[in-house]
Image (cartoon, rainbow, N blue to C red; front, top):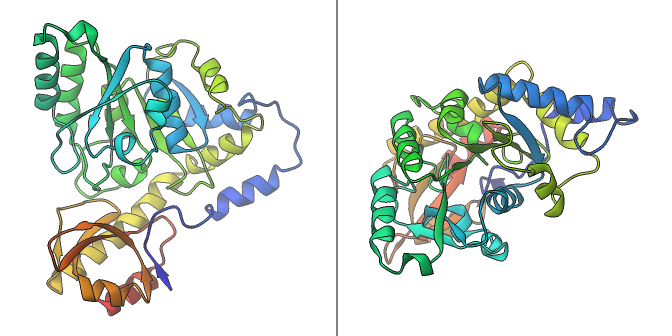
Length: 341
Protein backbone atom coordinates (compact mmCIF):
# COMPACT_ATOMS: atom_id res chain seq x y z
CA UNK A 1 0.00 0.00 0.00
CA UNK A 2 1.41 3.36 -1.05
CA UNK A 3 1.05 6.10 1.55
CA UNK A 4 0.93 9.83 0.83
CA UNK A 5 -1.46 10.66 3.66
CA UNK A 6 0.84 12.98 5.60
CA UNK A 7 4.45 13.99 6.18
CA UNK A 8 5.06 12.45 9.60
CA UNK A 9 4.47 8.79 8.80
CA UNK A 10 8.08 7.68 9.18
CA UNK A 11 10.18 7.77 12.35
CA UNK A 12 13.29 9.94 12.14
CA UNK A 13 16.23 10.61 9.86
CA UNK A 14 18.91 7.91 10.30
CA UNK A 15 21.52 10.48 11.36
CA UNK A 16 19.27 11.48 14.26
CA UNK A 17 18.81 7.89 15.35
CA UNK A 18 22.56 7.34 15.07
CA UNK A 19 23.30 10.35 17.29
CA UNK A 20 20.70 9.30 19.85
CA UNK A 21 22.33 5.88 20.05
CA UNK A 22 25.85 7.32 20.28
CA UNK A 23 24.87 9.56 23.19
CA UNK A 24 22.43 7.21 24.87
CA UNK A 25 24.52 6.37 27.93
CA UNK A 26 25.90 9.86 28.50
CA UNK A 27 24.83 11.64 31.66
CA UNK A 28 23.74 15.21 30.99
CA UNK A 29 21.82 17.91 32.82
CA UNK A 30 18.07 17.95 32.29
CA UNK A 31 15.46 20.42 31.14
CA UNK A 32 17.44 21.62 28.12
CA UNK A 33 20.58 22.55 30.05
CA UNK A 34 22.67 19.90 28.28
CA UNK A 35 25.38 20.81 25.74
CA UNK A 36 23.46 19.36 22.78
CA UNK A 37 20.41 21.54 23.37
CA UNK A 38 22.58 24.61 23.87
CA UNK A 39 24.44 23.82 20.66
CA UNK A 40 21.19 23.38 18.74
CA UNK A 41 19.90 26.73 19.99
CA UNK A 42 23.10 28.48 18.91
CA UNK A 43 22.96 26.91 15.45
CA UNK A 44 19.32 27.89 15.00
CA UNK A 45 19.89 31.50 16.07
CA UNK A 46 22.85 31.69 13.69
CA UNK A 47 20.74 30.33 10.82
CA UNK A 48 18.05 32.89 11.63
CA UNK A 49 20.61 35.73 11.93
CA UNK A 50 18.96 36.44 15.24
CA UNK A 51 21.70 36.81 17.86
CA UNK A 52 19.42 38.48 20.42
CA UNK A 53 16.82 35.72 20.35
CA UNK A 54 16.15 32.69 22.49
CA UNK A 55 15.15 29.15 21.59
CA UNK A 56 12.97 26.72 23.52
CA UNK A 57 12.15 23.16 22.45
CA UNK A 58 8.72 21.56 22.77
CA UNK A 59 7.37 18.19 21.70
CA UNK A 60 4.60 18.85 19.15
CA UNK A 61 2.72 21.46 17.16
CA UNK A 62 -0.53 21.69 19.10
CA UNK A 63 1.37 21.78 22.38
CA UNK A 64 3.59 24.53 20.99
CA UNK A 65 0.73 26.64 19.66
CA UNK A 66 -1.22 26.38 22.89
CA UNK A 67 1.79 27.11 25.09
CA UNK A 68 3.06 30.10 23.11
CA UNK A 69 -0.39 31.66 22.85
CA UNK A 70 -1.07 31.12 26.53
CA UNK A 71 2.28 32.69 27.43
CA UNK A 72 1.75 35.79 25.28
CA UNK A 73 -1.88 36.68 25.99
CA UNK A 74 -3.63 38.21 28.96
CA UNK A 75 -6.76 36.36 30.18
CA UNK A 76 -9.11 38.72 28.34
CA UNK A 77 -7.31 38.52 24.99
CA UNK A 78 -7.79 36.34 21.91
CA UNK A 79 -5.70 35.46 18.88
CA UNK A 80 -6.51 36.52 15.30
CA UNK A 81 -6.24 33.64 12.82
CA UNK A 82 -7.49 32.62 9.39
CA UNK A 83 -10.78 30.75 9.48
CA UNK A 84 -8.87 27.80 7.98
CA UNK A 85 -5.99 28.12 10.45
CA UNK A 86 -4.83 25.01 12.27
CA UNK A 87 -5.59 26.45 15.70
CA UNK A 88 -9.19 27.13 14.67
CA UNK A 89 -9.93 23.84 12.89
CA UNK A 90 -7.74 20.90 13.89
CA UNK A 91 -6.49 21.39 17.44
CA UNK A 92 -9.54 20.17 19.37
CA UNK A 93 -10.14 23.55 20.99
CA UNK A 94 -6.68 23.57 22.60
CA UNK A 95 -6.46 27.36 22.48
CA UNK A 96 -9.94 27.83 23.91
CA UNK A 97 -9.21 25.24 26.58
CA UNK A 98 -6.35 27.49 27.67
CA UNK A 99 -8.79 30.35 28.15
CA UNK A 100 -8.30 32.26 24.89
CA UNK A 101 -10.68 32.71 22.00
CA UNK A 102 -9.57 32.19 18.39
CA UNK A 103 -10.80 35.26 16.48
CA UNK A 104 -11.21 34.01 12.92
CA UNK A 105 -11.20 36.27 9.89
CA UNK A 106 -11.46 35.54 6.15
CA UNK A 107 -8.48 34.23 4.19
CA UNK A 108 -7.50 33.71 0.57
CA UNK A 109 -5.89 30.34 -0.22
CA UNK A 110 -5.28 29.88 3.50
CA UNK A 111 -3.46 33.20 3.97
CA UNK A 112 -4.30 36.25 6.03
CA UNK A 113 -3.77 39.64 4.44
CA UNK A 114 -2.64 42.84 6.06
CA UNK A 115 -5.75 44.59 4.77
CA UNK A 116 -8.09 42.04 6.35
CA UNK A 117 -6.31 42.31 9.69
CA UNK A 118 -6.46 46.11 9.53
CA UNK A 119 -10.17 46.04 8.64
CA UNK A 120 -10.87 43.71 11.56
CA UNK A 121 -9.04 45.99 13.98
CA UNK A 122 -10.72 49.14 12.66
CA UNK A 123 -14.15 47.58 12.97
CA UNK A 124 -13.35 46.24 16.43
CA UNK A 125 -12.41 49.65 17.84
CA UNK A 126 -15.29 51.33 16.00
CA UNK A 127 -17.70 49.23 18.06
CA UNK A 128 -18.74 51.26 21.07
CA UNK A 129 -18.98 48.07 23.11
CA UNK A 130 -15.51 46.79 22.32
CA UNK A 131 -14.39 47.03 25.96
CA UNK A 132 -16.94 44.30 26.72
CA UNK A 133 -15.51 42.02 24.07
CA UNK A 134 -12.53 39.67 23.77
CA UNK A 135 -9.60 41.94 22.95
CA UNK A 136 -7.39 41.03 19.96
CA UNK A 137 -4.01 40.27 21.51
CA UNK A 138 -1.88 38.72 18.78
CA UNK A 139 -1.90 37.47 15.18
CA UNK A 140 -1.28 33.85 14.19
CA UNK A 141 -0.21 32.77 10.70
CA UNK A 142 1.18 29.49 9.40
CA UNK A 143 3.86 29.08 6.75
CA UNK A 144 3.12 26.92 4.84
CA UNK A 145 -0.61 27.30 5.38
CA UNK A 146 -3.10 24.47 5.70
CA UNK A 147 -3.42 24.62 1.91
CA UNK A 148 0.31 24.39 1.26
CA UNK A 149 0.49 28.02 0.19
CA UNK A 150 3.20 30.47 1.18
CA UNK A 151 3.49 34.07 2.23
CA UNK A 152 5.89 36.31 0.35
CA UNK A 153 8.39 38.55 2.06
CA UNK A 154 6.28 41.57 1.12
CA UNK A 155 3.14 40.01 2.60
CA UNK A 156 4.88 39.25 5.90
CA UNK A 157 6.28 42.78 6.02
CA UNK A 158 2.82 44.25 5.42
CA UNK A 159 1.30 42.08 8.16
CA UNK A 160 4.11 43.07 10.51
CA UNK A 161 3.39 46.75 9.88
CA UNK A 162 -0.28 46.33 10.79
CA UNK A 163 0.70 44.35 13.88
CA UNK A 164 3.06 47.15 14.96
CA UNK A 165 0.32 49.73 14.46
CA UNK A 166 -1.97 47.89 16.87
CA UNK A 167 0.74 46.50 19.18
CA UNK A 168 -0.05 42.91 18.22
CA UNK A 169 2.72 40.29 18.44
CA UNK A 170 3.04 38.21 15.27
CA UNK A 171 3.33 34.44 15.78
CA UNK A 172 4.20 32.13 12.89
CA UNK A 173 3.37 28.42 13.03
CA UNK A 174 6.20 26.63 11.24
CA UNK A 175 5.17 23.02 11.67
CA UNK A 176 6.07 22.46 8.00
CA UNK A 177 8.49 25.36 7.76
CA UNK A 178 11.27 23.34 6.13
CA UNK A 179 9.07 22.65 3.12
CA UNK A 180 8.20 26.33 2.84
CA UNK A 181 11.83 27.38 2.94
CA UNK A 182 12.77 24.83 0.27
CA UNK A 183 9.96 25.76 -2.12
CA UNK A 184 10.83 26.97 -5.61
CA UNK A 185 11.00 30.77 -6.08
CA UNK A 186 10.16 31.71 -2.49
CA UNK A 187 11.80 34.85 -1.11
CA UNK A 188 11.09 33.96 2.52
CA UNK A 189 14.09 32.72 4.49
CA UNK A 190 14.71 32.10 8.18
CA UNK A 191 16.25 35.59 8.57
CA UNK A 192 13.21 37.13 6.83
CA UNK A 193 10.89 35.35 9.24
CA UNK A 194 12.99 36.36 12.23
CA UNK A 195 12.96 39.98 11.07
CA UNK A 196 9.17 40.10 10.79
CA UNK A 197 7.85 37.84 13.56
CA UNK A 198 8.00 38.16 17.32
CA UNK A 199 7.95 34.40 17.75
CA UNK A 200 7.87 31.44 15.39
CA UNK A 201 8.75 27.80 15.44
CA UNK A 202 10.75 25.47 13.26
CA UNK A 203 8.93 22.19 12.87
CA UNK A 204 10.80 18.97 13.40
CA UNK A 205 7.99 16.44 13.76
CA UNK A 206 7.05 16.76 10.09
CA UNK A 207 10.58 17.44 8.85
CA UNK A 208 12.90 14.64 9.87
CA UNK A 209 12.74 14.53 13.67
CA UNK A 210 11.15 11.79 15.73
CA UNK A 211 9.29 14.61 17.46
CA UNK A 212 9.88 18.22 18.41
CA UNK A 213 9.48 21.88 17.50
CA UNK A 214 12.04 24.65 18.05
CA UNK A 215 10.42 27.89 19.23
CA UNK A 216 12.37 31.02 18.33
CA UNK A 217 11.60 34.17 20.29
CA UNK A 218 13.32 36.81 18.20
CA UNK A 219 14.13 39.09 21.15
CA UNK A 220 14.97 37.38 24.42
CA UNK A 221 12.50 37.99 27.23
CA UNK A 222 9.73 39.08 24.84
CA UNK A 223 7.74 36.34 26.56
CA UNK A 224 8.23 36.85 30.26
CA UNK A 225 9.06 33.68 32.19
CA UNK A 226 8.52 31.56 29.08
CA UNK A 227 10.46 28.63 30.53
CA UNK A 228 8.20 28.65 33.59
CA UNK A 229 5.06 28.77 31.45
CA UNK A 230 6.34 25.81 29.42
CA UNK A 231 6.79 23.81 32.63
CA UNK A 232 3.42 24.88 34.02
CA UNK A 233 1.81 23.75 30.77
CA UNK A 234 3.27 20.26 31.14
CA UNK A 235 5.43 20.89 28.07
CA UNK A 236 8.89 20.67 29.62
CA UNK A 237 10.88 17.48 29.08
CA UNK A 238 13.16 16.40 31.90
CA UNK A 239 15.27 14.64 29.26
CA UNK A 240 15.50 17.80 27.21
CA UNK A 241 18.46 16.49 25.26
CA UNK A 242 16.03 14.22 23.36
CA UNK A 243 14.91 17.38 21.59
CA UNK A 244 18.24 19.16 21.53
CA UNK A 245 20.12 16.28 19.92
CA UNK A 246 17.57 16.02 17.12
CA UNK A 247 17.73 19.71 16.22
CA UNK A 248 21.50 19.80 16.63
CA UNK A 249 21.70 17.11 13.94
CA UNK A 250 19.09 18.78 11.72
CA UNK A 251 21.02 22.06 11.81
CA UNK A 252 24.42 20.50 11.08
CA UNK A 253 25.77 20.61 7.51
CA UNK A 254 22.47 21.84 6.07
CA UNK A 255 20.55 18.61 6.77
CA UNK A 256 17.23 20.37 7.48
CA UNK A 257 17.38 22.22 4.18
CA UNK A 258 18.53 19.20 2.20
CA UNK A 259 15.81 16.82 3.36
CA UNK A 260 13.16 19.51 2.90
CA UNK A 261 14.35 20.09 -0.67
CA UNK A 262 13.99 16.35 -1.34
CA UNK A 263 10.28 16.51 -0.46
CA UNK A 264 9.78 19.57 -2.65
CA UNK A 265 11.52 17.98 -5.65
CA UNK A 266 9.20 14.96 -5.48
CA UNK A 267 6.11 17.11 -4.94
CA UNK A 268 7.04 19.17 -8.01
CA UNK A 269 7.52 15.97 -10.00
CA UNK A 270 4.12 14.70 -8.89
CA UNK A 271 2.45 18.02 -9.72
CA UNK A 272 4.04 18.33 -13.17
CA UNK A 273 3.20 14.76 -14.14
CA UNK A 274 -0.41 15.01 -12.98
CA UNK A 275 -0.82 18.29 -14.83
CA UNK A 276 0.47 16.63 -17.99
CA UNK A 277 -2.13 13.90 -17.49
CA UNK A 278 -4.85 16.55 -17.37
CA UNK A 279 -5.59 16.64 -13.65
CA UNK A 280 -6.82 19.85 -12.06
CA UNK A 281 -5.64 21.27 -8.73
CA UNK A 282 -7.68 23.14 -6.14
CA UNK A 283 -5.01 25.86 -6.17
CA UNK A 284 -1.30 26.25 -6.81
CA UNK A 285 0.78 24.86 -3.96
CA UNK A 286 4.57 25.26 -4.13
CA UNK A 287 5.16 22.99 -1.14
CA UNK A 288 4.99 19.31 -0.29
CA UNK A 289 1.18 19.26 -0.12
CA UNK A 290 -0.64 18.87 -3.44
CA UNK A 291 -4.42 19.19 -3.61
CA UNK A 292 -5.79 17.27 -6.59
CA UNK A 293 -9.37 17.03 -7.83
CA UNK A 294 -10.39 13.42 -8.45
CA UNK A 295 -13.56 11.90 -9.78
CA UNK A 296 -15.25 10.06 -6.91
CA UNK A 297 -15.22 6.62 -8.52
CA UNK A 298 -11.56 6.99 -9.41
CA UNK A 299 -10.84 8.09 -5.84
CA UNK A 300 -12.53 4.97 -4.47
CA UNK A 301 -10.46 2.75 -6.75
CA UNK A 302 -7.23 4.53 -5.86
CA UNK A 303 -7.95 4.11 -2.14
CA UNK A 304 -7.58 0.35 -2.56
CA UNK A 305 -3.90 0.79 -3.41
CA UNK A 306 -2.85 4.12 -1.92
CA UNK A 307 -3.53 6.18 1.17
CA UNK A 308 -4.11 9.93 0.96
CA UNK A 309 -6.11 12.61 2.75
CA UNK A 310 -9.67 13.27 1.63
CA UNK A 311 -9.79 17.04 1.90
CA UNK A 312 -13.19 18.39 0.86
CA UNK A 313 -15.97 17.85 -1.69
CA UNK A 314 -15.46 19.72 -4.94
CA UNK A 315 -18.84 19.07 -6.53
CA UNK A 316 -21.38 16.25 -6.66
CA UNK A 317 -19.04 13.89 -8.51
CA UNK A 318 -15.55 15.11 -7.57
CA UNK A 319 -13.50 15.40 -4.37
CA UNK A 320 -10.31 17.23 -3.46
CA UNK A 321 -7.64 14.91 -2.08
CA UNK A 322 -4.24 15.75 -0.67
CA UNK A 323 -1.02 13.95 -1.54
CA UNK A 324 1.84 14.84 0.81
CA UNK A 325 5.48 14.06 0.19
CA UNK A 326 8.04 14.16 2.99
CA UNK A 327 11.74 14.13 3.74
CA UNK A 328 11.56 10.31 3.53
CA UNK A 329 9.39 9.81 0.44
CA UNK A 330 10.92 7.38 -2.04
CA UNK A 331 10.99 8.37 -5.70
CA UNK A 332 9.79 4.92 -6.71
CA UNK A 333 6.66 5.46 -4.60
CA UNK A 334 5.92 8.66 -6.52
CA UNK A 335 6.39 6.75 -9.77
CA UNK A 336 4.06 4.02 -8.55
CA UNK A 337 1.40 6.56 -7.60
CA UNK A 338 1.64 8.21 -10.99
CA UNK A 339 1.22 4.82 -12.64
CA UNK A 340 -2.05 4.34 -10.74
CA UNK A 341 -3.29 7.75 -11.90
